[in-house]
Image (cartoon, rainbow, N blue to C red; front, side, top):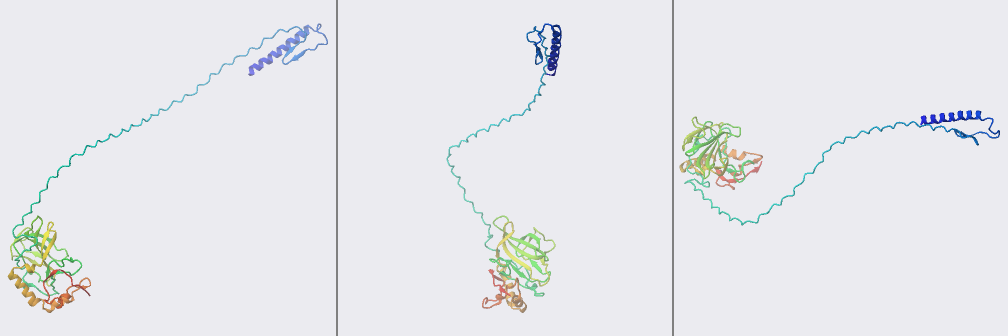
Length: 336
């Protein structure tokens, strides 16, 4: 645009110079009353000769500016996620109901024959005495605890004491009650001296069952160990407790569940061989139960704030006097 304007200005100047020259050449011929008229940049003379036209300035063509190419955005390739077609579940054909099979009859179990003389409900009989009654002593507070009596909360209510505790002299002889096998030997569980020895008297009708005789707080004689056999009346052990302590426990029961539990606990005095029973019972009834030290023990012994034995001395309740065996679960405890 600035070049065009400059050209127009130059053309106007040239026109003015030309008119001035013409005017000088024609000054005498021009009427005095005619004045030149100037219109815009071009001066026109009324009634004068036509001026030589000035060529129009040729506009210099401006080079066309080529537009800078806009940068082309390279499209980022984004993978199109093609949804996985979920297959339509194939309907499971339900087979037609088949005929109900006829159950195979289960044969009745054949009862296992009980070996002769072995019955879990019939205790072993004809036992030998496990002790020598002459070894009983009441020194240091020796005490007899009978079978069947509920003495404390640890005794099962339906059973009571499962054996008989007898006070023996230290080292007193302990005998096998029948021909038997030493089934187990374990340390006493009450932190007292000796072992708990279980004799297998007769095997039961199933494995892990048997009539057993239990001895507590004894020491087996040298040469006798777990698994050995002993014969009826054999000296097999010694009392390991101090003299007069009444924890020499003797028990007859039927063991089951791999010999871990006992049932059918039985007063073994009643299962003694006739002569042995007579000897033991006669000594107990004739001398032991009437001794002042025995009566004092049952009359004053307490446990858990109770008198567990005192009522057994009441002749109105028990006219036959103290016994070695009572009915299972006998409970005569009285508050102190």
